[in-house]
Amino acid sequence: MTQALRLGIAGLGTVGVGVVKIVRRHADLLQARTGRPVQITAVSARDANKDRGVNLSDYAWETDPVSLAKRDDVDVFVELMGGENGPAKASVEAALASGKDVVTANKALLAIHGQELAEKAEAAGRVIRFEAAVAGGIPVIKSLTEGLAGNEITRVMGVMNGTCNYILTRMQSQELGYNALFEECAQLGYLEADPNLDVGGIDAAHKLALLSSIAFGTKPNFNGIEIEGIQQISLDDIHQAHDMGYRIKLLGVAQRTARGLEQRMQPCLVPSDSPLGQLEGGTNMVVLDGDAVEQIVLRGPGAGEGPTASAVMGDVCDLARGLHIPTFGRPAASLEEAKPAVTGLPAPYYLRLGLQDKPGALAKVASILGDAGVSIDRMRQYGHAESTAPVLIVTHKTTRATLDVALEGLRDTDVIAGEPVALRIEEV
Ligand code: NAP
Ligand code: HSE
Image 1: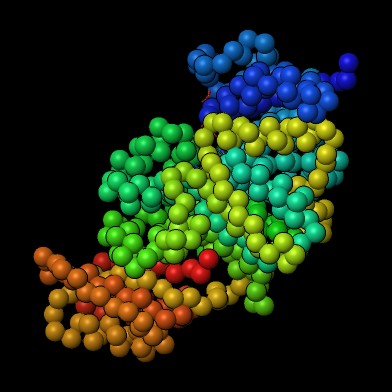
Image 2 (image 1 turned 90 degrees about the vertical axis):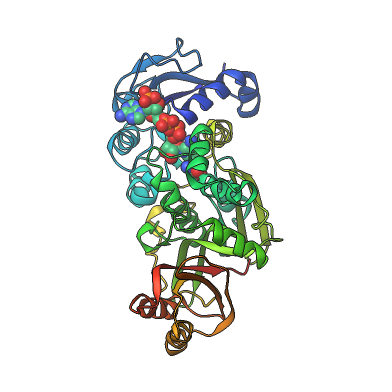
């Protein structure tokens, strides 16, 4: 019989258990598709006594994931613990040094250490696969590295964090508060171990850094991404955006410009009737623009046990078939430094300000915006019970740098209460 591909799985949480279930449920299917049996030989997690709802008795147990990574009866090390350092990094390095390929769902690890690990993998003649790290069940990395390999990619854009999209759409449809929605996300298994990674936009930015690297042939540059989370978005913003024909989404955009590589992950207003505007719940969407294909839109579940395990198994099957594509789609040594674009492309902005309800306050705001070179397109002040009046402004196109000058001026006046909210209105 053809030799089996033997997996060692470190991490038996949401994703790890999902992988065990697929390997057990689809043993025949996996063999039929790859031409060889796919088996688990050993597993690791912190608590050996936890009931995980799957039968693990056939597999050797290792308390230390580094030991698991070095085992002779493991061909592919599957890292599903998470964390950008610690046992995840140590065990991936140990696996590569022991001559094993690696499959991981860990975007934090690769966004920060991807270049170094890709170089280590290539030096060892191995690969790191990470389809599950970006947009859950959507095969976006496969699309970029394989299906679109004949294109120059001009832009990567998308909603890549299920938790944030779930919270933002349920705020809209159910009028529910942030805390209740956050709890629902935890129940659904969407949240990172540190949920601030989700709502702070960091998890989605990790994913953008990885896509950007593959799309543009640059070293992953997480620190070059402009990041804002969704914590400051209020029900009021959701309603106002809706009234103007928009939805608020945590949107990632990466594109090459004459000024360098623009990468941003921010809450933005997108038209309600656009595919991105209509994206509901924990679903993710990635829009890829290429010079030959023009545009493709990929949509699917961005998190959770089944979808993420599905992506892990796609990588495992490729390895079982002998497909070895370099980690970021081309040799690590050929990846260029990503020069961050200094000023983003201009766009209209939505501003929400808490204005002191006193004579001359609005005039002061208009003059600060005008002095900074920000032109007002629309403005609305609406009903209020207290001494602070909410004011909404939609600007004409301006750069974020110009807007930041205006926001600084607004913060320095005595007519604004609280922090101004500024959201880009994105053409999608
Ligand atoms: P999780 O449910 O928190 O599971 C983590 C697992 O790792 C647990 O089984 C834990 O053991 C184990 N673990 C943690 N530290 C360990 C250590 N030092 N030694 C051995 N085992 C250790 O996490 P998850 O949601 O499955 O996520 C795993 C990875 O997939 C992360 O990188 C995450 O970002 C990524 N990811 C998750 C999703 C998702 O929808 N959940 C989607 C895409 C990507 P115990 O169970 O014994 O505590
Ligand atoms: N916490 C992530 C999300 C999991 O909500 O999208 C998938 O990466």
